[in-house]
Length: 136
Image 1: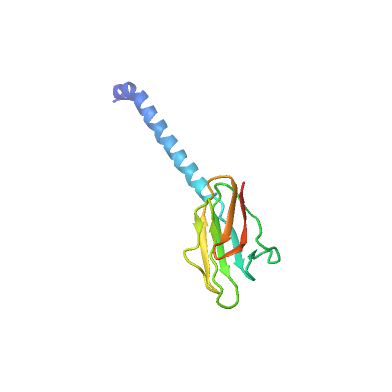
Image 2: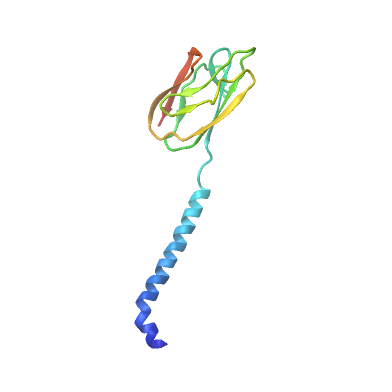
């Protein structure tokens, strides 16, 4: 038995070392997952034929600033009175509502910007409803 241990001690050490590395790698990966920040949340409202950020309702068609690689949760609400339809499209980021929204409807869009740059957002039915998305 001692002879076998002496003969295979290098292999045993390498196997134990590899197992230890795997354990610490899994542990580090698991801790990293729990440290992932929640998505950046924005609420964009269509009202008075303009886009408004819910936190700054007096600013018309605001510039939205996002971070490359950080998930975004964008809630788009149509608060237009009557029967005015609105949609939201962000060109270059492949983001759009699934349909035109009636008054009182909302849709949540989730995406992660993959490139830095400046992109346009708009309501395709109202040319004056447009703004910029800056991805840093």
